Length: 446
Image (cartoon, rainbow, N blue to C red):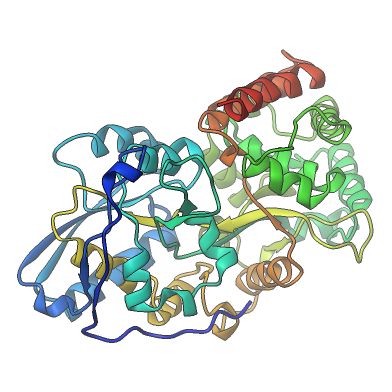
């Protein structure tokens, strides 16, 4: 994918009318009447930023970009607070409602987080800064839609812009090359070959697939991978964005649930997967335990460091080798501005800096997948090249579908818990889809 890079003018000031608060039923934070992009002229500023860039390559790129930002703008000091995804999700809601909220936050763009924050008026729409910095020339609409909401937080994928992501994401198959070779197998090119590899790994005494589902959300990615093989992409997209006309109670979704249960019955996952954390699971894979790991491209740097040239990555194969990909993905968590930001222009300058073309080069060099200028980067051979190729294929063939937990404000919790019950054999596939449909129907009725 190529997203044309362009930089906004260094000292542009735009003046626009503010939208009246009375027209924002959710109490939306309004955009300012003017914005400034000359960050060096903003005076001394202290900027508090919360992010979830805690893993190896993620932490490295953020530390470098903060250092570079402060070097370019010595008048702005960044106080960076880094938390794990789960910790950030837990603490952010309370923080945004307090008087000491951070200026910039990395917020999960699903309805349960960003949608609710928009509804509560806790995030500032970034549209005027987007014009000033010309973000539209760096990011296509298909990327920006993942950070757009209507003012009331009801409609996802349309409306005002509330965040800007750094990285692209796609959920695929990490595989241990050595183990596949010992099994006499090549990387699978069809879904049947993939399931055959799982069966042969189990028969040979290997752990076919690593999964740590204590945190509940990891199984969402596994289910989404299976769902994409039996469910049309447009049906998944409509469902995940919570739009009218979608339903969980379909033969395709039930079949996906049945397939997941069959994998449990066949022993394709590591023992005790529902009680193991996400990080310990992928770290175990990184130690050479397991043939496959269904996970996102955010693990690229860490797994490359752990396994070197022994690890590969590919998109989940289709029913046929030439099938169009249907794969969960999109953007990483976008960076957003809170309504408590003390200097909103400084906050916007920070967001612009860490998503600039130069920042994309830093992301590439630290083992991450930049969302912009992707085809202009030079990833090293091996896992990085696999990841860049897979993401480029998914985007160019329009095969990306949104994360399923985007669907409703409560779907993250509902789906995660339902998958734990399904895979623990505490609920049947039919009970599983019934539970999800109840959540979905309740939201649609509002």
